[in-house]
Image (cartoon, rainbow, N blue to C red; front, side, top):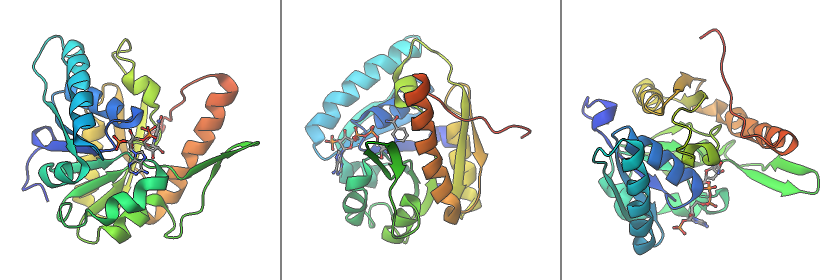
Length: 231
Ligand SMILES: NC(=O)c1ccc[n+]([C@@H]2O[C@H](COP(=O)([O-])OP(=O)(O)OC[C@H]3O[C@@H](n4cnc5c(N)ncnc54)[C@H](OP(=O)(O)O)[C@@H]3O)[C@@H](O)[C@H]2O)c1
C-alpha cells in the first residue's frame, strides 16, 4: 500500500483540489511539510491554484520550502501515493469511474458529503450504495477507501491567521493499515487528531453528521467542528 513508508514521506494528491476544501487541506498539509499534488479537470487551473497555495503555505511555514504542484485529476491520481477526493457529490461517481486503474493499490480518502438544500435548510441525499465512501469503494475495487475530513470547515482550513485548528477527524474504513495512515495524516493538521470511528459501512452517519454541523453554522454563524471526548 505504502511500502511501510511513514505518512510524512507520502505524496498526497487532492482531486478537486482547486475548491475551498481541497485547497484548505492542501495548504495546511503543505505547511506541515507534506508533498501535495492538486488535481483539477483543467490542469492549467490546477497549476495556477498550486502556485497560490504554495505561496500561502510557505508563509505559514515561516519561509520554509513547500511542495505543491498542480495537474489533471487523472495525472494526480496516478502520481500520488495517497489521494483525497474533494469534488462535489454531483461529480463524485463520474470522477472516480475513470480512475480505478491509477488509484489501484492506493489509499483513497473521501470527504464528500451528499448534501442538498431546500427552503428548510440542509439535508442528506440518499446514496444508493449507502454512503459516498461506499460508492467510492464500489467504483475503486482495488483501492482502500477511507472516509475522513468531513467535519472540517474549509473557511477555517484556509484561514492561516489561525495557526491552530480545533477538533477531531472521524476516520472510517475497513483496512486497519489504511485507517491508521489517515489518522496519522489528520494528526499533521495543527491541533487536529484522527479518531477511528468504525467500518466503511458506518460512513453514512459520519457524512450525514456534517449536515447537522451546517445547520449549527447557519444558526450560530459559526464554523463548527466536532471533538470526541474520553479518547
Ligand atoms: N467546503 C467545506 O467546508 C467542506 C467541508 C467538508 C466536506 N466538504 C466536501 O468536500 C468536497 C469539496 O468541497 P468544496 O466546497 O471545495 O467544493 P467545490 O468548490 O464545489 O468543488 C471542488 C472542486 O471540484 C471540481 N468540480 C466541480 N464540479 C465538478 C464535477 N461535476 N465533477 C468533477 N469535479 C468537479 C472543481 O474543480 P475544477 O473545476 O478545477 O475541476 C472545484 O474547484 C464536497 O464534496 C464537500 O461535500 C466540503
